[in-house]
Amino acid sequence: MKKNPSPALCDSIELPCGAVLKNRLAKSPMSDSLGDGEGNPTDAQVRLYEKWAEGGVGLSIIGEVQGDPRFPEKPGNLVLGKHANHQAMRSLASRASINGAHIWPQLGHAGALSHLPVSSPTGPSPLNVEGLQSRGMSLTEIQQLPDIYAQAASYAKKAGFTGVHIHAGHGFLLSQFLSPLFNHRTDGYGGSIEARMRIIQEIIEKTRTAVGPTFPIGIRINATDKLEGGLTEADALEVVRILDRTTIDLIDISGGTYFPGAKASSDGVASGKIYFLEFAKQAKTLTNIPLMLTGGFTKHAQAIETINDGSADIIGLARALALNPKLADNWINGEKSGTSPLC
Image 1 (cartoon, rainbow, N blue to C red):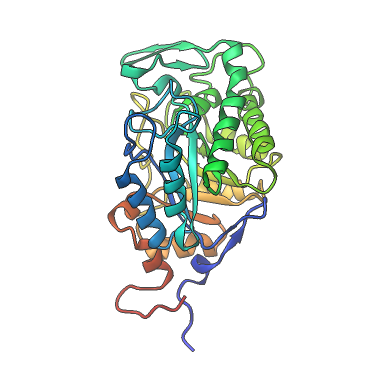
Image 2 (cartoon, rainbow, N blue to C red):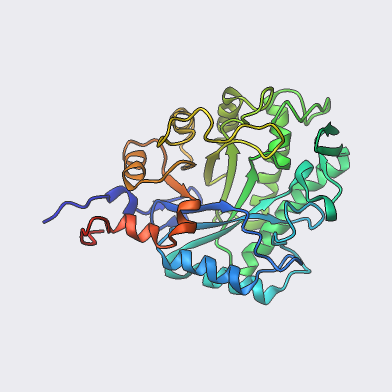
């Protein structure tokens, strides 16, 4: 009998809520901007996510899906809510979850990075730098956020999506709350990392109440903002410690921001190396919640090694899957160099 070349990638994983992902490869959230401009999926978007499901991913995450239509990252973002095209949303959820795949919308709010032609950018504190201005949020606006996220998650569940993913990375609103560079509040939502994390905890709690105990809730966080004065790795590890006390089912580790002057996620990483790998190894010592690691995976062997050595539980792939929607099946089945499928 031939030895399975990549047993870990084939393995299913049970999340804390009881949901099971069929394997360890996920389509990481990307802002595809394929919506119709009114917050609804297009046929092209539905077909794209269907292709990723056909290609073998265990999980696909739709990037930058809004619960509040006033603060999109781009005009092509989806918007979950009463004004959505329910038939189109159900079609996306259904066709993207064929072949046993999970499909989760990434619940976002662009904050200071909201698309200017249709938004009035806002953040935890006023911001006025070259190329980027926003007003600070009132306490009432902050306290409305948990309901906005919870309602979006509830809608996602009713539409047939199999989980949700909270976006707290890459410089968007919740990432701005976590960053001391952008959060200068002096009330209960600013100051220490615990206070800067408060709104995220409130969102998780409200969302969990809305969707129940068995529906997956993931979250994306930054390992670092890649900005001087921004979120440090030490604070990001404290975020992991705090998340360990919540009902989150998956922590997705990424990094960097879209703010002017930010370094690329790959900056300082040797060619061919995985981004944020050392951070993930430290995070694994702080939590039993499954970790997903995204950034820099270009080779089959990298994914196998990262899963097999316990650095992460799930591998997030983005551009690689955009180039080859069948990459998950190829890697899992060992379809390289003419080898036979063994998984």
